[in-house]
Image (cartoon, rainbow, N blue to C red; front, side, top):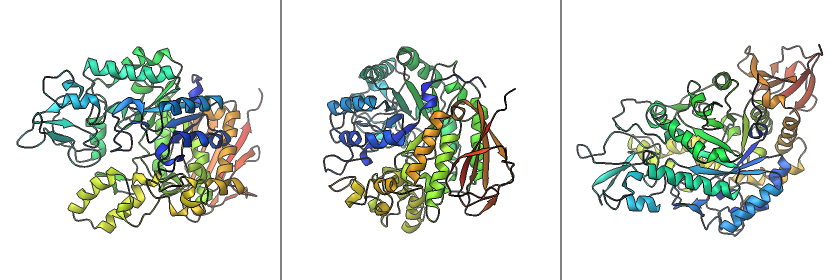
Length: 553
């Protein structure tokens, strides 16, 4: 496989949710100086690229994904001087920094929207989507991804504006030439500062189907794919961003990919397309989501997960690329969702680390995964902070669900599972702040924290370090082919990476022992998460990597 070599394929991303990473001022909110103070932790871990969630000016209706000024840093995070220092400190350690760019929508407090809503004939009116109502209600039956109608009535001009997310996140109208030129200016501003690229939020949604016809689909996942994403001009818009600005810089662009599937992914990431470098596809992250979304759970299996990984690897071929990840700021903790966060928390967290660091794609580690942080089970709905929870709660209670039942769904699938503060040590609030944190720390911080991980032998943190170093020295894990090589057991995941050498990864993703029915006589066991492994039997959540050198011809 002649895969083009790129630095962003060889390096590993670490995602920081700044509000919850480290507070330096005592106000209970993580900030830029807090990030700076923890950069050596990331360097020691073996990270190459830091992706930082939005730190722009924002009313924080959706924790920064509602931007009111793309050129300013929110004071709760610090100043532009703090950001410049962060960029210098990251680069001085040989790491890179990418920003989160939210281009599908702005805040309703952005100057553009305030002017847009003022009158029907002002120059900013077409920066957003405005429609008259229909039959005394919204223009169509679109629902917001965060619950309720996707249209909000504005009495100033007696029309509705579109918001696929919260009502304080009006969708930008990329049909406007003036709006697109503003976007190019924003991108150029940050690239001129010297950042190393962007993660582009919900980028497949920037082109709308302008007829805005009612949807007859009752599966919301299909609505996202077929109605909200993959619009008629989406590739034209992304390519224009590349041609107008991005191609002039040695940077990476990774798109969040709701609605992107194997059959259309190369339209976004094919090397000949000049659009995105790679995507965070979300097919595996939507597993277990029923027709109504994440709070409508349905069963899924590891067979489903493995089939998705194979499907995507087949789809990207030699000319595409993806990121490999199992959690982020929008989905539950991976050890709670895909592992066993009780009896086998350490072993399953290590197994999942080996998985995301050995599949074909650029790995992305979410903050706290390197110590096996888990979902949080707050006792009261009032302890949560995510606007999605409160919007959806109203809908579900109106349908007759009890508060206790809904709280249980939040325990499993709420976004605040991954937004509780980083657990640095066993001191008050996990060492995150000496004030009152904006959201409570997970109560298990006294036993699950960075300081304790660094003291333990066979720790999750130490295993991440080991595998990250191994990946740097074995380019087969970057450019080699991928293939699942055994489907005999639903509880085993066995696959190989073939390049300069053959590497075979064996994962027992179950709570039971499993027989290893594979000839390993000519293989060397390079990595494992159990002491004194039994060659013929895998312990619960045991993970191994074998190396088989090619014979010289």
